[in-house]
Length: 491
Image 1: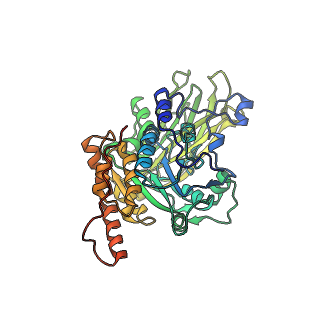
Image 2: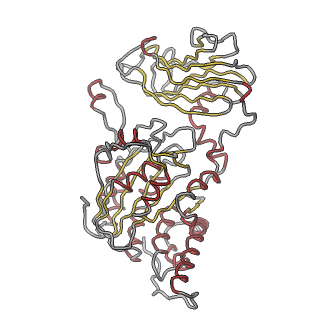
Image 3: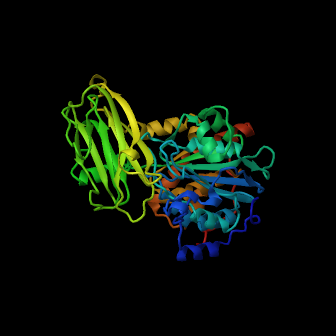
């Protein structure tokens, strides 16, 4: 059930809680199996776990903010959290929306194996919003495909929510905050695992987003970065560890890189087409493969990496296997070890996640076959663009297939996320245009450049709204309806 009464958020209490800011986004929860084995493994907070749950909104205007918690955008949640009091202050003083409730959602990449790919908060109207958002885990995971699990978010809110307070003919407001795309199908197995719902088959993303828009006006807030920043986020930690350890990351036919985060000694093995195994005991193969980084032989670091690669033009045609083995435990407790493998073959990059030694295994009994592939040097794409799926035009083009293009709001500074959300709600009013939003935005703490960026993001939406109103009225407006001066919001 929805908690709190209409517009009951205490702005001053929200500000006080942020000044103390104890434990926001630092929730740690042990699973039952982890408790039994003594392992510390993070997972979704029980109150935010959507499995078997339906979220209900009794208020008139449901608002959802769904935030990308992967490597590229995870810290946007902190900006939203810190500025919730401003959001409520302006919305309440200006009367942008009536009797509203907010649900926060954090999403990652279920396909890449993120442990918290979907975290869903209740629709709240009061300071429980602060508590729920602070319990979310910014996992900063993700895969290597330029896609995250936004389609799972769309599925949940399309089919697993009840909007009881909506007036006839009205919709709620839904904001995705991400700079990546979504997967082409909603996976039936993921829906079963994460939501506890039996689905007979996968569903195409078009249908899910179509049904979501029956309940909500859907928007994408797309925070842009420089291309170098984007590439740094994509490659991120594995590239950093490999290169700092002296390994070869670029200019390869094949590269397998293994990353984990404790002092245990995981080992990376690759079996070649000639059945030759490259590993710590045989670091160079006759066919040109090389283990050039081998960490934690003595448990020397909590940020280890291993790397096996073939330089350009060296790899043989044939079948390869990539294996992860736990050679030895160096930590005090023999607990499961989370790992990630990044595999580059002919310029194409994939990411895999797994757990080594779930029952304390070591040596060959702990072997996990991570990937198996056929390599053909004649299929290599020279000068490949492994970042193609992450380019702004590709990502925005994908979103434009499921929501109106004017609802894609591009910003250069994530600090303006709240202003853009408030601008959307303001423009939904019959007597508000972009000039009014500009006045209302003054005094919210943004720099002139940030305000300009937020207003720029809203231009297309404002223009489409003006045209729609003119068409509905049957003629172009000759005079703007004047709102009473409201002054500057006091923060």
